[in-house]
Length: 507
Image 1 (cartoon, rainbow, N blue to C red):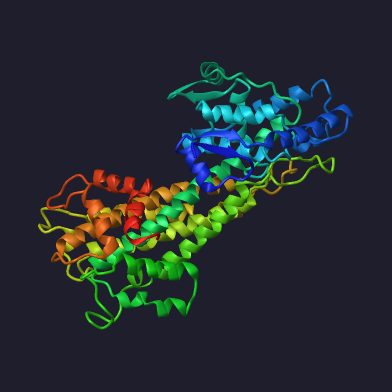
Image 2: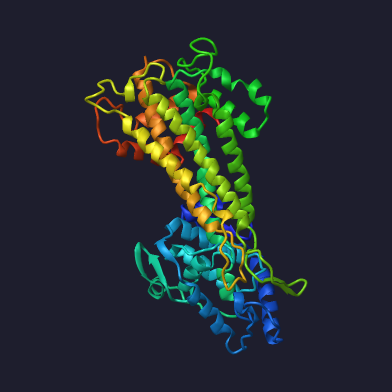
């Protein structure tokens, strides 16, 4: 489809299409009516002078302060301005686009009490590619992503900053150039725009999508290394994995066997040695656990993507406005910490396989550091240093953000999730893992060039050829960071996994 339809039921793949593919978005039929019904109940509550949190009262600790009807609209704009306190680098464009999409999707559910105009303006930002400048730091992830969302909302009201056609400028100017009229917020709308979890969830959606690519890539890199080290295939026998029937473990064992099918480099138990080291023998167990974790986290993220996470919520059928805590980011915080650990382990075991290839004491006959004229040349020596550094860094940032909490708003908000921190850390770890796997793939291809030129497996042949189409064999020392980046790019955009899958089926 040329468009992504907003109806409160997005898939992770829809987010990728809008965030990275810049697909157009529009509201589904029927959505407008449910948004209007929700707004009508808010208008009625205002008319009847009811006490409604964030509509006729202040926010947080100021929830016990009533605001006059004459001041309720000023209250909403003040909320956006006062909460725009973010610091740090601006979030990347793809994340900003995902954030806007998710906020529009939540508001389209019809529980938030905003006018249809607000949702339409968010979609207009996406379709005309006006991207608010959102600092990456400042969210506690409990009253939702208040701070970063406030920076998003600033642009809607003609303030703040935005990037339009590659140029950073004042939000008002960006709207003017894109021919978008700024919004004058009405009651509840400022709160509905900034109270929720779309920032942490947008980052989580991108991270989990990328993690799915990494678990496939990890299997490919492990299979290529297994051949490079003349590994033992017996450890992948289906009987072993059916005796411990974790789905991920079974899937990885099958993947490896499909990738190496027909290879002449491999051995069986007892032929050259009885057992391989754990980094080869336990690939199904380690990769499989990560695979299962990614699948679990994806399900949680998908639920959050289509959840209503602002406050208070409007239930027009029952004519109720109820204040609760759906803005609390704990489901994302805990699960993105889980994702951090799962993805980190792909790099941890990969680095050990890299070490086995470059270390002549462990490589089953390969030259030291995978270079023929060692001494004059250092070969792949320092690539293992880089992998080790990235793995060590991952260990530090894999510490769970969700176990921390610092009370805010005069102790009214006395437990917070730190979910946005967990999400940002997950993205950083995903990027580190790409580089480690790129190094392993480069070393595995180099190792195979040091061997006697036997037949590669059905899937590993495809991977090897793709690597060699972008990175030449290392005969003498050269600058290697470009080679790493070339393979990194194939991993990041999914080219490597997709190309292999076309030959052997889905990994």
